[in-house]
Length: 121
View 1: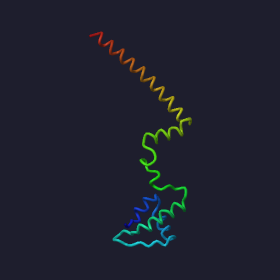
View 2: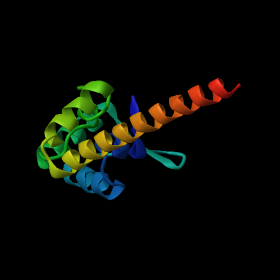
View 3: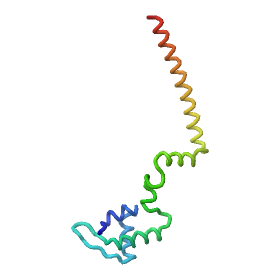
């Protein structure tokens, strides 16, 4: 299978300049097909492994896709647990509680008004 340089760049989540620099370091040969430059599957695998050895702090695209490690609800819960003790989360909680109380008061007043209107009829 042949890989387009643009697809390689997207899968590595880096710039094309980085891909070309890595190709030069590895002496990777490409084939011109119209406007696209293509590399073989073996060259892609070699480039992929070399990239993540050279830049160990970067993660492959597969490891940070949303559906891979955590589903949406677990990811949200996990992120919330990380920041649960922070001041801004505490502020959000107090704001939420305040607005819940305001909503409760508004609903009580609304029901009282409805009762008064029904009594007048």
